[in-house]
Image 1 (spheres, rainbow, N blue to C red):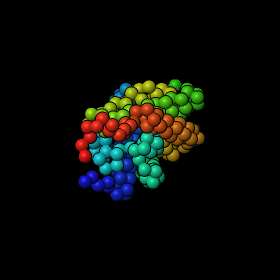
Image 2 (image 1 turned 90 degrees about the horizontal axis):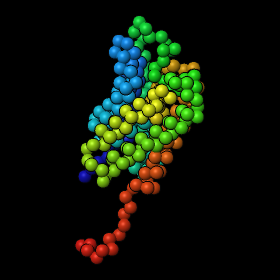
Image 3 (image 1 turned 30 degrees about the vertical axis):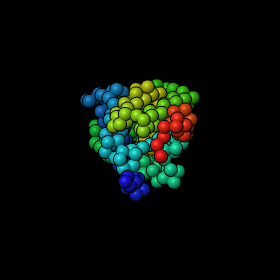
Image 4 (image 1 turned 135 degrees about the vertical axis):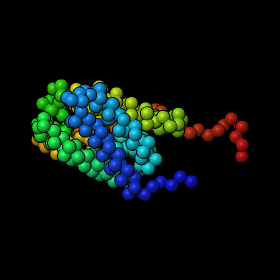
Amino acid sequence: MIVTPHIGRRAAAEAIGTFWLVLGGCGSAVLAAGPPASIGALGVALAFGLTVLTMAYAVGHISGCHLNPAVTVGLWAGKRFPARDIFPYVIAQVGGAVIASMVIYLIAKGGPSFDFPSGGLAQNGYGKGSPGGYPLASAAIIEWVLTAAFLLVILGSTDGRAPVGFAPIAIGLALTLIHLISIPVTNTSVNPARSTGPALLVGGLALQQLWLFWIAPLAGGLTGGVIYRAIFSEVIRPDVSGTEKG
């Protein structure tokens, strides 16, 4: 018999997993994207994907490894997650992201070239806050569409009909691809918790624009969950072949 862990343990797993996502993803952007490491956008995208892949194997069997309020809401929309557990998951995810952002700041401020807050903590933004100067409309569309696509990958790869054991790989690679597409536009959120951690510390424009990185990913999560549920979920039909055994 499969026993679901207590909500406290699942929330702790979400906090730890989201901490790892922000530390690995945003940390690579702050500490390693430029010289001397200079891993660039490709390296940062891969780092985000690896954090999800590794934590999916580490805590996926405990909490499901959402690490993202948009994923939690999307799974609820897809009938895979109970509404009563949304709030504790989201609080844990945001808490893990904030703590990770603090750790990144404490490390980064020891660097001779780190200039805070102008140097930032890999915060998300549009307009003046966008790496490529993309406007609000572009940022909203890409965050919404990519989060919806992310939910389709998550729901599809964890479907009972999908190959067993490969979901973390598909999900991690999907997040890598998402970052390759959208880093120039918004610095890639698709995750309100990931956006909240850096914005709370940086303040200013990042905090003023944070609303978009809650609304667009949550809307995308809902869209992806509803689409998968409506189109791809298995429909259970009665056996009318006359061969069913009693």
